[in-house]
Length: 127
Image (spheres, rainbow, N blue to C red):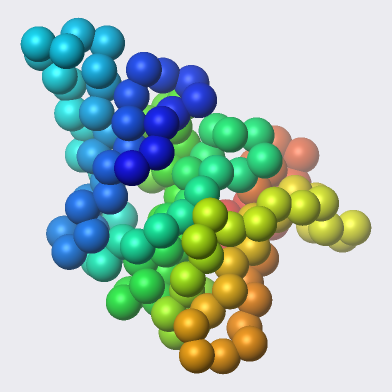
């Protein structure tokens, strides 16, 4: 569960279903829930440097799902290789590809970098 930086809502991973629930808490007696289909066995993740995009590992599916928390939709589902396990992930500026988010993997030394700037680096975004 993480809180959006843009909207009064929580993002809730429902691990086994592969669903991310966006729970709008602006009216506590009438919660609005938006379902975002991702990939199964959502585990952990974190935000990109802008705080707009939430990246979460679906470690049994070997993917990372990317949710745009401003537009409330899935913007990417990236194949990563076996068992991505990011914790919250790491953000940094790559000299060639611009802003990236990084994750490690369980059981090997693989590090995956995913571009997170669709405006200035569209060719690298969500890859």
